[in-house]
Length: 71
Image (cartoon, rainbow, N blue to C red; front, side, top):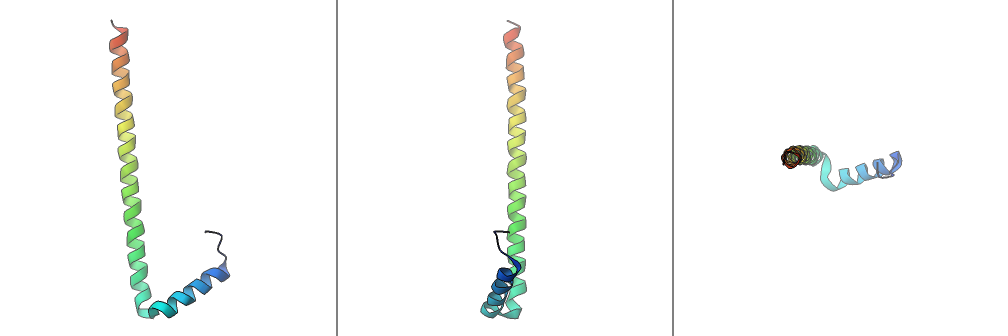
């Protein structure tokens, strides 16, 4: 994970603990988790929209090729 070892992660956790305190850390974690969840949701929606658009384009291309070959 970003090339960080256990020691670095522990140091970062201790610094965060001192900066924000024990009461605020769970709130920060919930907020960060919610933001990541929302990001993944939007990313999934965008990917599914792109797939749907690609499939629609392929269908239109097939229809065009059928009509061109019939002439």
